Picture 1 (tube, one colour):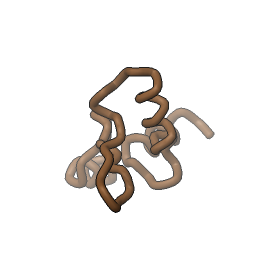
Picture 2 (picture 1 turned 180 degrees about the horizontal axis):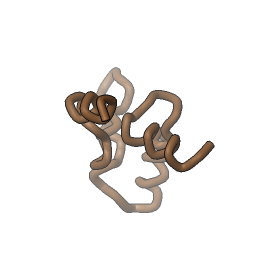
Picture 3 (picture 1 turned 180 degrees about the vertical axis):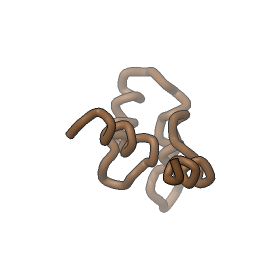
Picture 4 (picture 1 turned 135 degrees about the horizontal axis):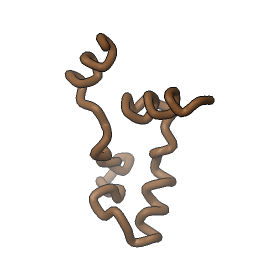
Length: 67
């Protein structure tokens, strides 16, 4: 896989393609860094994974596709 593919998958937040998942977020917690990205526990639901600063909004994704 090349760099362009990897960056595109990260920016577009494609399911199953990004390495930014719950396990990565738990590792951040263990290391004590990037507090804004730690999992947020919710009762009776899956933990919430906050979006990273590089994640594109729907509007920006559409502009990216047009480009």
